[in-house]
Length: 252
Image (cartoon, rainbow, N blue to C red; front, side, top):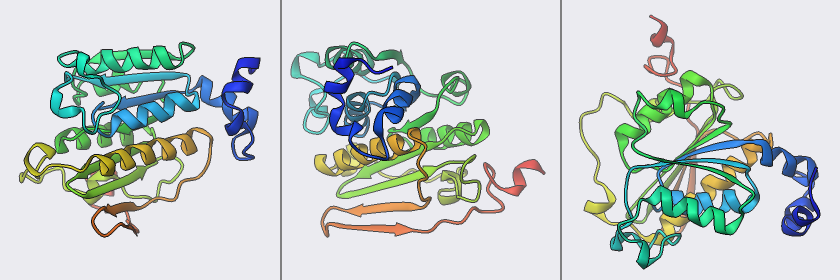
């Protein structure tokens, strides 16, 4: 049951027929695993908490640095040196103390992911490491948990939804990027990143996650954003039969 305060707080959301009171109540009961609290994770967390997602499991091993502040607007200068999960949990508690937050300091390794995925409804991959993205993708496919993957570098952003249960014909992240590839792409530390680009991708990760949590179908595919040309492109992706994660070859 929604309280009087809930009606006041979430009233604009409740007006939408695709959301309404049932959707708001559903969000309050669901758990999101958000991995990475940098430029993608900050806006994603703020909008998920703002929407009233009741249970948030946050994972990050990093601390706040001065160089984070131009694009990771959740943090303050006086929090430099503090664990990001601690600072993020403090923000959620101040914003809406009615939400449940688990702050887990550490890497989301392949060994830890099965436990991190316990009782999770949707996962947001907001990391900036290719190896982590592959590990998260593999764990979500194996567990059948929907995954919203985001990335940004320079002026470019990327979004992808992997929903192995509700959309079994969609590709996974390993269909797009070979997990056995040894070449390491440039990171934001090497190539730089435009803050509004990474913020836009993180915000849209939250939007896609909310749609999944509300039981709405999300069309699979890869979305790419070019901040210099200000253009979005969408690419159809078919599952790769030889994919070691979701393809037929994994059972051989």
